[in-house]
Every structure is written in structure tokens, then in C-alpha cells.
Image (tube, rainbow, N blue to C red; front, side, top):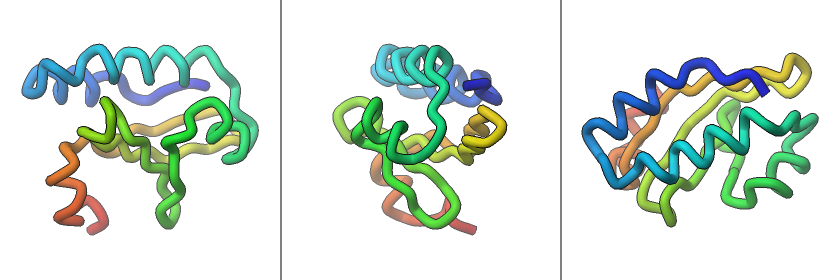
Length: 95
């Protein structure tokens, strides 16, 4: 999959250094695998859930959430938000 953009991950782990390993691992799995649909994605990353038009990934043992727009037909993943679990629960990202 082609991921856009790693910058969001770097910016997040600069503020939350303990997230770097988990986010880097997620990035590598996504980059090296061409998922064709949600079922394949969930087989490879079982913490992925569809929330409306978004795919939400639990990162770092459910400590963080990564929200992405995944276009299986084009092989592209747009990283929209990386949040702490508390920020995610507030729901501001939905606006």
C-alpha cells in the first residue's frame, strides 16, 4: 500500500515518544502488504475497525488510535489523524 503521509506519524511520536515503535511497525506492515479489502486488512491487522468512511487502528496496545482513509482499489492509505485514546474518545476528529 502507498501511505500518505509518514510526516503525521513522526509529528505524533515526537510528542509521544513511546508510540514510535508501534507506529513504525504499523507503517511497515501497511507499506509491505497490498490489502484488497477490509477482510484482508483485518486478517493482517485485527485491531482495525471501520467507523463510517474511516478505518480506525488501535496502536500500542490500545493506547493510541490511528485514523485513516483506505482506498483498497487504488492501494492508497491517507493518514488523517493519530490520537491518544483520550483524544479519540472526545470525538473532535469526526468533525
